[in-house]
Amino acid sequence: MDMRAKLKAGLTQRGLAPHIADAFIMNFQDESGLNPGINEASPTVPGSRGGYGLYQLTGPRRRQYEAFASQKGAPLDSVDAQLDFMMEELR
Image (cartoon, rainbow, N blue to C red; front, side, top):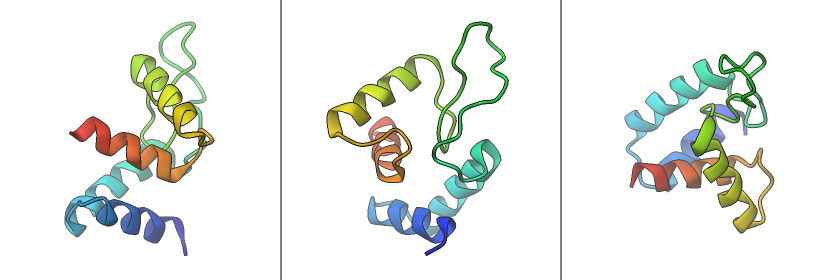
């Protein structure tokens, strides 16, 4: 299964309508090139670790995601952990 299909399946299984899932996937493409393990190459905030993941979590949101993934026992580049965290944020 390619990454787009994996993301769409993951988002719709989490309750998003297909057209909404498509919109998130387009954003992920712009943010990360659909790479769940990518770290922002040139952070704009001096001393920052930059954005991380599919939708480039930064600052406190990145730290919250890292704690979330750790609590779940998931690697940071886990697509499922990132989608679960995103759904938590949307709630």
